[in-house]
Amino acid sequence: FFDIESEFDNLLSNNEHVNDDKHDSSRRRQITAPDASFQTYENNMLDDDEDRILTEREDRLFQYINNTQKVESCILIGVENLSLLRKERKEIMNSMNSNNLNDNNGINANGGNTPQESQSLGFTLEESMTEMRELIKTAGLSLQGEITQRLQEVNPKTYIGTGKVKEAQELLEKVGCCTVVFDAELTPGQQKALENVFNRKVIENDFLGSDDDDVVKVVDRTALILDIFAQHAKTREGKLQVDLALHEYRKPRLTRMWTHLERQSGSGGVGLRGPGETQLEVDKRILRDRILVLKEKIDDVQKQRDLHRRGRKKGGLPVLALVGYTNAGKSTLLNCLTKAGILAENILFATLDPTTRRVKLPGYKTHPEVLLTDTVGFIQKLPTQLVAAFRATLEEVREADVLVHVLDVSNPTWKKQEVSVTKVLEDIGAGDKPIVRVFNKLDLLDEEDAEMLKYEAVCSDDYSVGISSFTGAGLSDFVAVVEDALSGLLVPVELELPYSCGQEVNLIHEVGSIEIIDYREKGTYVMGRVPRSLAMKLDKYSVAQRDGLVDDESDEDELDWAALGKGRHEKKIV
Picture (cartoon, rainbow, N blue to C red):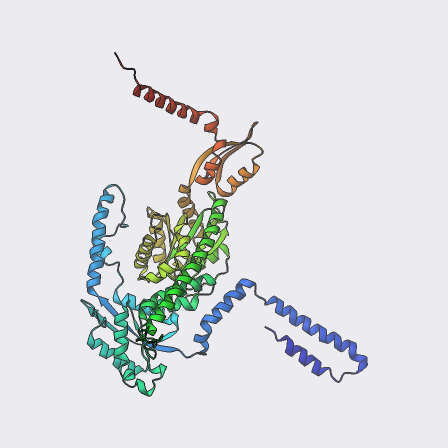
């Protein structure tokens, strides 16, 4: 922006030697220039949402652009566990065999995939390594080298073979880095054994005093994802959930800490002295108490979210939850539909906290307004600590009426990402929800490939649509598909409301659709479709109940019960 203070200084310095008779004219010049500066400043001012987004983007990316902080370097080790792949393929085949019974009834739970296609839905080593490179970049590390290995069975002690351990140690000395990242979830024993091998010289010379920069750290996939979450957590709720996940992860990995305090000396007099309590036991107790406190705070957060959800249910508006793989474009779609102003960056896990906005979709007839919720992105091999810690956030997905599954079709592995997200949804109990598949980022594809995906979406039996949340193309089709998905949530009603019930008629206009409305002598006749909860509230105004159709059925039931009672107490023949 224009430097207003320097403009003031220049004007004052130029007018120091001006005569008194020209004081008024110089004063006018001093006022005129600042007014122009203020006008320029006001024209370039940002609103609150844009300022917040730019500030958050600066906090995350400034260190990479300007190199203001020392970037930690690392090497990446990827392992393809062939025995695990065979186990996963066997599970897929078993699930396909169990779904053959559903196919006979017209239900294809496998989505039409052949056995060969289903076996190829797992991530290959190269694809998993590509994803790990993106995670390393998001975490702020600099990748200096890679090592890969295919194993029939993993080494229970060091996960990789002894030859690869030596190769990794030589690569560490060659590139001069002190961090090793594994594309796998290591056990605490494997992590400690690897650190002991890599830090053998440091351990032998520990009495000389070792520098922390010389200690090699071993980071597995879970720790890397948790570190990214810790960097991106901004709100109190997000920080609590990430803190709980980190404590759960570190609890079995405390053995390498506090080595200088092996035991506390026993005290208390004769007969009570002994080795005392180890420092490790004290740390575990402190960590356990901290976990209990964090769980209580998260329970309070979950109660608050439950209250918010109850309030939204009373309003009768349907809830749409945006789910999908990380960096699929969920936040961009929410900003495009609602102008929410949330951060949407081309990085992994940019969104951690759910954001709900009330939006009126253009051309929408069934529900004039809906609630749209953006949720945290998923990833393959999602750590169990995160799923448990983010249960309050994932409740938004489980309580939604319809799930909008956003797919990044510009990614070559988007079909495998879809399978990973579907598996996570089933694990959290949201697999039975109506799902709208959104083929996003069509603008990044060739025109022919984009048209093929649009044609596939139109011809599919489920709710599918192709859009570009960046350019806004295809949003009208998206609204039509969402309307079809939400039509099953409405029930037909035929009501005659008194003229004193104007608020109920207005509510039907807001949350339902009216096909026929007629103003009669006794009240307002309405025929349309409304949510089931509202239909139960307005059941006393039903035309069928007023005409006595329901009473006749109840009378028939009472007569049947009376006849049955008389038959049970027949007179005895003497």
